[in-house]
Length: 228
Image (cartoon, rainbow, N blue to C red):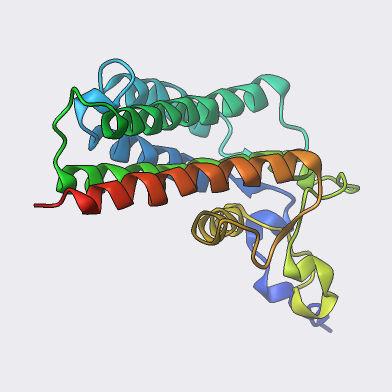
């Protein structure tokens, strides 16, 4: 005699059922970030354009091979390495945004409008991916702590968490959920369906909105004005 799975059980990701969350989506995200960084003009990069992508590769690939999944027993050194990896891409993107604004407000660079639009789009996309990674890494102490039997209080309230009828059994937010939060926050400049609950979540979302506002309003608007 077989037992029918609980409602929504068949919708659960195998890694989440086992209490583990795969690391590869985050690795793919940082690799995409590195690829986008290589598309920026040299003057918008901190140091040689290849420097940050090379550092990311040196950390991301071995980290994924050694620890392909996040779980509650993850070592401290692995968690610190993950933070360093996200911090690297965050610093690179913040530096690119600052230099892009410098080019717009300064008078010593003749920057074409189309080039500015391309750079602004790359910086905005990288900004969204970086903050999605931060949200994923910090909510409830990170994906390793979210798999614990008694996870920490949430930093973000997803619709599925507010209404049990909307979620499958054992549902937990994955990286794609946090990337969606970052995308909507970066376009609406405010929370949409997912609410920040803690001070650090609110500070992160405010910083993300501010960076997006600078990119979209200041950079893009200026670039459109100088289009030939």
